[in-house]
Amino acid sequence: MKKHFLFLIVFGLFNTAYSIDSSNLNSGSIVNTWIWEKSVGGVSNPYIATPKTAGFNKKVIFTSNGRVITYKNDVEIRNSSYEIGKGIGFADQTEHELITFEGKTYVIENLDNQNLTIVSNNQDAARSIFKR
Image (tube, rainbow, N blue to C red; front, side, top):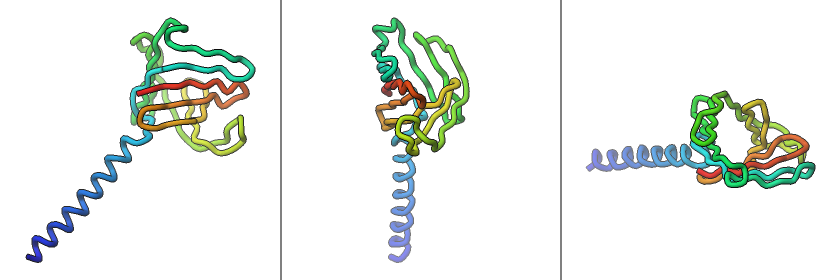
C-alpha cells in the first residue's frame, strides 16, 4: 500500500511539473510565425497600411535560437538576429520589453498566444500588428 501511495505522489509531482512547463512554452512567446495584419503610423506620419493597401503579404518568423526571418509574398527577404531585453520606451520613458531586429528597436506593446503588437521606439511610434 505504501508503494502505491508513494507512486501516486511521485506521478502527481511529475505530471504537475510537466503541465506547468508546457503552458509556459506556448503562452506569450515571441518564438513563432507571425503574419502582418496592419501598420499604423505615428503622430508625425499618420497612415494605415494593410497587406491589401501595400500590395504584399508579410510574415516574420522568430526562432528559438535568436534569428528572425522575414518573408514578403512568401519569398525570404531577410534573415538576421534579434534581441529581447528591458529598456526605456521613448514615448512614456518607462521600462518595457524591447525587441531589436533589422536595425530597429521596438517596444513590445502586446504579446499573447495570438497577437503581437510592436511600436517603433522613437518619436514616430509607428505600430505594427501581427497575428499567428
